[in-house]
Length: 461
Image 1: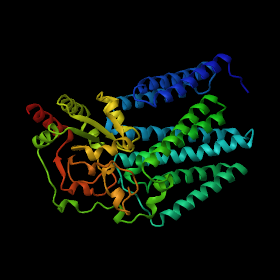
Image 2: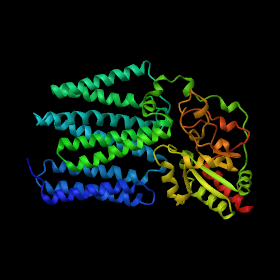
Image 3: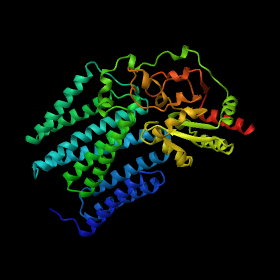
Image 4: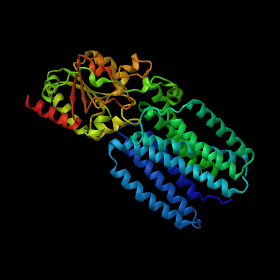
C-alpha cells in the first residue's frame, strides 16, 4: 500500500477546510460568492495533488483527455446557461456526479479480484446503488424541468407495487452481492438501481421538484463519500459527507415548508387520481383584466406593496425591471417588500439568487413566516410569475397535489395583481381560484414588457 506524502496530506487538509468554509459561505447571500470561490479553490487543489502525488499514474493521457472534454462541456454550459435553466443544469450536473461515483465503484469491483474486507465491498455496493439512483433520478428531473416530458406525476398502473417490488429486489441483490460477489449479479444490481431511480421520481409532481433536486443532491453526496472509502481517499469522504449532510438538512427543511413529510412528497402521488392533477376549465370563467396604466396608479397610491416573485419572473428575465419599479415606488414613499416562498421557482433559493443578480437589498427579502402576517395590512400585492405558492387549493382542495403546502396568504391583501402570460396553470398543473376573485386584477403579457410599461406609466404620474 502506497503511503501518501505528508505534503499531500496537508494539501488535502487545506482543501477540506476550503470545503467547510465554502459551505458556511454559501449559507448567506452576502458571503455566497466568496464561499463558491473557496469551494472551487479546494477542488482545484484536490485535483492537482492527485497528479503530483502520483507521478507514475496509469492511463494518464486518458485521464487528461477526459478532463479536457469535461472542461470543454462544463465551462461553456455554466457560463451561458440562463437563470431559468439553472435548475436543469444543477439536476444534470448532480446526476453526472452520482453516475461517476457509481461507475468508479463498478470499475473497482471488476478490477479488485478479492476485496480486503466486507466493509469495503459493502461500501462499493452501496455506492453502485445510491449513485445509480441519483443518476437516473436526476436525469428524469432534468427532463421534467426542461418540460421534455410532463411535469405532472407520471402514474403507472400498480405503480406503487412495482416500485416496492423493485426496491425489494434491489435490496436483495445488494445483500446477495456482498455475500457472494459475481459480475452477473453486479449487472443485475446496476440495472435494478437505475430502474429504481426512475420509478422514484416519476410520480413526483412539478411543485415538489425542488425538494427532489435537494434529495438527489444528498444521494450524490453519500455515494461520493462511500466511493471515498472504497478508494481510500479521505478528502472524498469529507466532501461527500458535507454534501450529503447539507442536502439532507435542506431536504428536510423544504419538506417542512411544503407542509408534509418527505415520504408524502416521494410516494403520495401513487394514490393520486386524474382529478388531483387536472388543469380544470378556468378559461371559461370571468376574470378581471387591466392595463399597465391602471396597475401603475394602484401601486403609486398605495402605502404598502408586496412583490411575490416566481418562475415567470426568471423566464422573462425581469429582475432588473422589477428592481427599477420598486425603486420608483420607494422614492414615492411606498413601503415595498418581497415575499419569498421556500419552494418558489425550480430549485432551492432560486428567487434569492435571481433577485441578488439585480442587487435587490437583502433586507427587502422576507421569508414566508415573516411576511404572511403583513398581507392583511397591504393595499396591493404584485404577483409576478408565481402561481402554486399562492394557490388557495393548498388549503381548500384535498385532492390537489399541493394540498397541505403552506402558501403566501396573498388572498388576504386588499388588492392582488397577477402578471401572467396566459391562464395556463402553474408547474403543479392545477387551476388557481385566486385568479377569479373579485379583488384580483390580471395584467397579461410578458412580465418584462408589462413591468416596463408599468414603470413608464409610473414615471409619468
